[in-house]
Image (tube, rainbow, N blue to C red; front, top):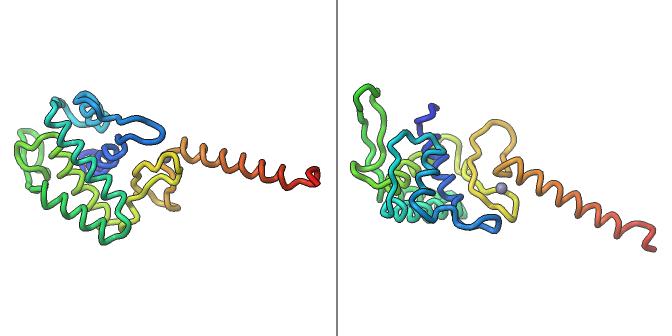
Length: 188
Ligand SMILES: [Zn+2]
């Protein structure tokens, strides 16, 4: 998968979903500049010019992606992704000068939010078709719950980051130590 293939679209959809307000951070998508920064952080080539309509559509796409990651089972997940594709996607091969034929998923003239909805839904749908529905998950840290993609080899990824993994490990260790003190013979 290349940097400009569907894995990047899926990563963008996941990052967009994770801009929503959480226990650990406020809403990260409050201004058009926030959306431009998100796109640039995912290697979107210039020009990245974002206005209020782009932001509004991106927030609608964020709600839809959040619902996809929150789907309780495979049927609901497929239904939500299919609705996003039906509402936003018009896949077509495009050639720009000097760029080989490649796939655009959004309709011509779509806003950045429309592009995110269409390309992100296609990226997630292709990952689900390739790896299964478990590829879409959420961080096991109760105070995080960020959306994550389980595309790597090896054991099922539980945490969004090393930060969350070690925070939960330290908390569990402290809880066990407290438990140990309480249960120690010194108390009797
Ligand atoms: Zn996390």
